[in-house]
Length: 186
Image (cartoon, rainbow, N blue to C red; front, top):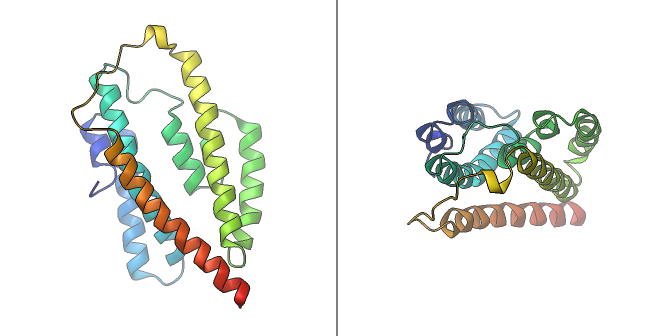
């Protein structure tokens, strides 16, 4: 929870872990050192601090159950990519048509971000949820539940990383709502 990506590296999801760690560190440096792109860097930092601990927890559960942690069509990766990029979660799961549409739509919404931050966040969140669902279906067809080992319950409750993520994202959404109201009042 302190440094996104370290939990994934510990669970042997090295590619994802190192990518999260490097992107987070670069975003922190960019947020501190540069006035240009500070908003994007801060958004990346928030999204990685929200989603990385949840992903690390469920990656550990999968690792402990003997499920390949680097297996394709990871719903959490697809959602994170769509939440932080212009639809690359669809590209990750192999849905090129949805990627093209999401890429164009997200560019349009990011251009409107200055005047409609709430609409942009709702759009990005919707794309993330959609990618999560598509990846979940693809993973289920590749790894049917009957063929997967049963994941043992951890002594660390799943609700803890989910609650922390919900609190952080709740504050983020509150800021987005306040920003939208302030922009409307002008």
